[in-house]
Amino acid sequence: MPPRIPAPVLSYQGRLHTPDTLPVSGGTLSPAQWVARHLGFQPDPVQSEILDHPAHRLILNCTRQWGKTTVCAAKALHFALNRPASTTLVAANCARQSETFLEKILSFLQILHIPRASVPGRPSSILLPNHARILSLPGHADGIRGFTADLLIFDEAARVPNSLFAALTPTLATTGGPFWLLSTPDGPDNLFYTLWHDENAPFSRFSVPASECPRITPEFLDSERFLLGEAAFLQEYFCQFAGTSSTAFALDLIDAAIDPSIQSILGDKPLCR
Image (cartoon, rainbow, N blue to C red):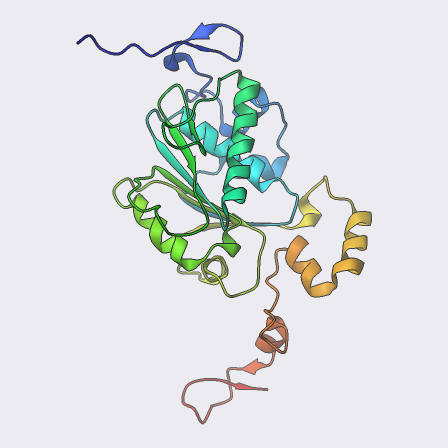
């Protein structure tokens, strides 16, 4: 049987081309430069830094409405276009959130004039002309084992159950592919909080508060502080982890009350001041 010839697709310049001539960077453009040239938006300095950062394991803790889904969707598309036949998995706390990530990639494909195609039998997926796959997954661990991933992304990772992490992180076991966690904080009772604060966890960490987002005005933040209250405001816009409803005091107040120099009758545990 003769070898299969990939069907031509419409290029972003309006010409027919094969997967070999997709708009990839080819090493001549950084991801941020590629995004600015091909995807129709100019990343701000912090977005450019994250797009270009080579971190294999990345945690992005950022304000609401900074554009974390947009930036990481662009970074994921750049990854897939430059890695034929790769598999990218996108997970979140619910199917709607991971599908939103996929929809952002689809909007980029429309800008590039790359027709949409799905993996057979998986409507919540993208199949690129270079045979790279991008799949969005539901927010539970049932029925999602068995994948092998070249890139694993958790969107709104602070809200993802531990069972979903346990089901999906082994998908990187044989590829050693990148692992990205992006989220606004959601209290301390989650793996995102643990990995953010554990200095021994092998991740590159980025914190982006609202004060570093040029699209969020001080006037809006003043209004939100009034509406949300201080604890929720700092969590939503300034990357701080608020205490949970099960705690009587905010965690920072509890931490400030601990004096490690006082010997506890319980052993080596410090007492409160």
